[in-house]
Amino acid sequence: MTPLLFMVLAMEMGVIITMLFHSPLRNLIIVNLDRLKQGRGLVTSRTIAATVFTVFVFNVYDILKTQKRLIEFGTTNPTDEVLLANNVLEASLMGFCLFLALMIDRLHYYVKELWLLRKSLKVTRDSNPIQPVNKNKKA
Image (cartoon, rainbow, N blue to C red; front, top):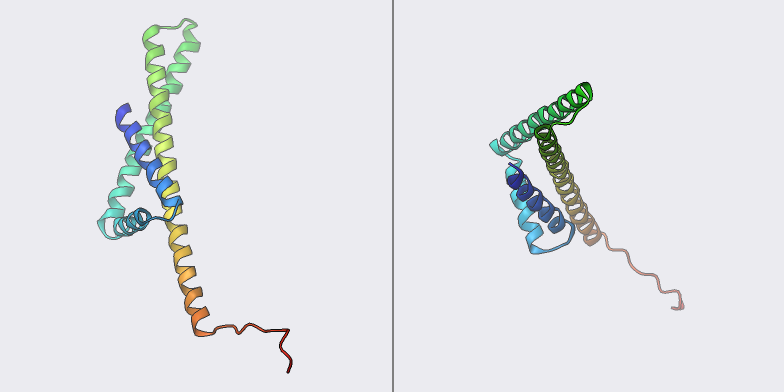
């Protein structure tokens, strides 16, 4: 599961970097995110996020259970140490994935709002142009 989470993290970081800079690829990503947020795509993405969050919570619970066992017995078992390290790695990767997914959602919203705002300002500016005043011209 760890290589899959690393791959998802790399893809999410790539999407975020692409959305930060104006390029044709950003327009493609925004169009695809618009399509994803319509219809069944939204339900599917929320279901996947809820599943990842549930597994994240169970990993945190296992981490706490293992730490409690280590404190209770006072000795460290090598198997428990390996399991604890694996659970901490998976939990942190899942948390980062969920955080980056939230960042992608918010970036998509802000880029879309900025695009709509610029479009409305351009229409307003074109319909009511402001004439420059020349102060050097004598009346």
